[in-house]
View (cartoon, rainbow, N blue to C red):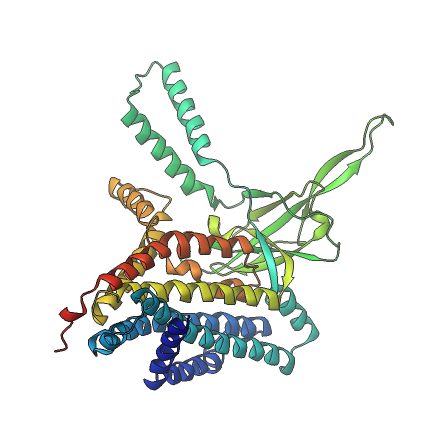
Amino acid sequence: MISFLSIVRLTVKNALRSHIFQLLMLLLLLCIFLIPNTIVGDDTAHGYIQIALKYSLGTVSFILSLSAIWLGCFLMCSDTENYQLHMVVSKPISRVTIWLGKYCGILLIHVFLMLFACTIIYATVLWQFNRQGFTEKEKARIQNEVMVGRRVFYPNQPTIQQAALKKLEALNTEKKAKGQEIDTSPATQRKALRMIQNDILRNIGEIKYGASRSWEYSNLPTGLDKNRPVYLRYRTYVNKVSSEDQRMTRGMWAVWVAAPVKAEDKNRPVEQQFFQVPLSSQPEQFLTGVFHEKVIKATCIQDDGKVKIAFLNVDPKASGLFFQPKDGPKLLIKISGFSENFFRGMIVMFIQLAVLAGLACAAASAMSMPTAVFIVISYLMFGSFATFMAGTTFFSSTADQVGYTVSKILLMIVIPIQNFEISPFIANGELIEISYIWGIIWKYLILRGLPIYLFGIWLYWRRELGLVIKK
């Protein structure tokens, strides 16, 4: 244990001696104080606090991630290339102890920097919230929509596979009735099924002009205080799902409300009838391509934890509007306060640093510093590209299908770094679930990271130091 702590202490000292620690502190301070004052928001108190959280936390996470990779590779390689490790291994110290000590030293440095930066961000946000001349209405909105932890509920998704099978069966039945010949070969049927699925996916998110669409939610908490707000968060696009050419449009939201209906027979139980109640007296104007939120009363949640909402498209140019599945529309209900949700975000950042520092140390166990950095960054980029390809829902060719399959296989071994991004959650007041935290610990730190770390330790243990020659 004494040897392990000595290696940790020497690793931290080496980082301080190289002035990397001081440089990182300066960069973090610049990001925390400059970003909220240089990025233009929507000129509202709500937008100002969101920017202070989202961009400051995002930039801090990005800087610390790069630093964990670079510093891990640098400290692991420098001791070997400068022959310092040759002196250490001459002592009765296991190479496993050396590796673990260096890893923990690198992680300790970045955990301190993370705590330093996150504490300043947290204190700055609270200070700005209390210091700025926000109105009571603006403060209430910030506390209900940003400085809060709200659980997200997505609508029940239709089973596309079953819908496509039913449609294919109906088409085959129709062809038989017309006396047409049907190619029942498996390859032809799979191709027809895939085309039907793609057609359903294209149309499922579109609401044509003058048409409406409804969404149903399940497993919502019941018995909430009737004054507690339930937020409907949505984003829609006009003409196509793209950030370009978006403009103002009009639409109208409605919610189904249950009302008791007395039966004529007194012995029969009281039945419920549902009525569609608009959330506004007339269609509302809003900008497409950005998120909006509306308040729904908690009394709209039925006794069985279900809610049904609808949207009517009344676009002034008679264009279709598109909803992406990942955008919901989703319902948000307060579960925790801002401090608890912020602390959960720090836990996710700690796990991210632990994963990246381990990858860097593993790669540098048997490689030079430039090669190790290249290997780690390439590995993470594969994870990002695989996540993007695996999210494809429309296949226009066989190449798309092959890319989708390869991406699914890659995701079993790579680590998508974007899955650790928590700044949008905190800035939008969305709760970071405990299940999400345990999920990334299990999937990325244990299942994917641990085998790589063990392999790196084995390479470090087997490395022939006599072959290391400084040029």
